Amino acid sequence: MTPKPEFGPDDFENPDAPEGERRLRSDHFEVRDLSYERSRMRQLIDLYKGAVFDPGWEKRDDLDPEDETTWQTERLETYIKERPRGKGYVADFVYNSKDLPVTVYGILINRGRGLEVTELELFRSSWGYFDGWSTFVDPDDSADVGETDEDDSPEPEQLITSDVLRRIPIGRIIAMSQQSLAQEEWRTDGIQVLMGRDRGPDELTHAETNALESAVLAANRTKRGRPPLPDETLAAVAHAYLEEAPAGVGLLKRLSQRFNRPEPTVRDWIATARREGFLTAAVPGKRGAAPGPRLTSATAATAVRPR
Image 1 (cartoon, rainbow, N blue to C red):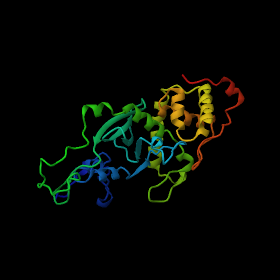
Image 2 (cartoon, one colour):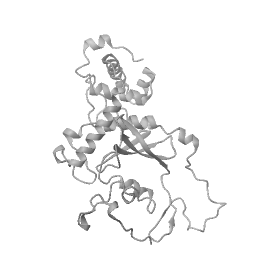
Image 3 (cartoon, rainbow, N blue to C red):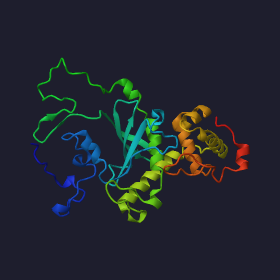
Image 4 (cartoon, rainbow, N blue to C red):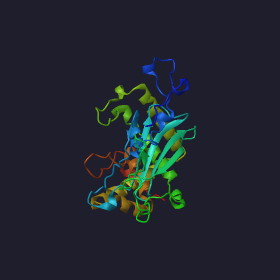
């Protein structure tokens, strides 16, 4: 078995503390990555530790469990670690898309110019590892190690090629991260806790609050580089939404065709229209929306189709 590692003063954040109270540095290899002796799933589970987590599930009005065309095709999980990974640290992320054969893991930082990706890792859904007895475990191999017939082994289904690398949507990942991290509902609603009691805003620790504040700051700096949507555009989006909503499933697709814009862009427009008061807020378990307080006859008269 692998011998127990021995640590020195440089390994700890507080080397002068009593032995049982010493904490390893947040950037220490034993804290950062346990994947070389454990499964990939263990590495992903470790992301939850000491982190505020956003699972990245879409809040959509046109989702139909029986219509595959309305299903979510990509998902970005964000993990805001209480203990920063290094200077400028903002969050970890895990991105999956039905169009990619690999999972994308990375780290976001802020050097004063908004969100940037400083580390990127691509991997299959599972991979081999060494167990406690130094035996290699291959999840893709049902036979015992050393007994496989090379001629009968299928080719790996998930490979990282130059084509896959070109398809990694870095810009999209940053945009999705910015949208997730900019949310500030935690200030009034607190946070949800996995397998535990949810906590209100007055129950957040100092480390959690600092991490969330840093994420909001980085996200808002990214947002300032984009001009806000004019009221006329938001009014046009709201009216189109209200006209198309009664037709039911496929709302987002129809609006995308109507405005000749990608569905993610139209989804962001709808969210902005809600936030700015041109549509009412979404109600859990219910579809559609009603005209918001700012969707008045004056805005209706000046509403134009977005270009």
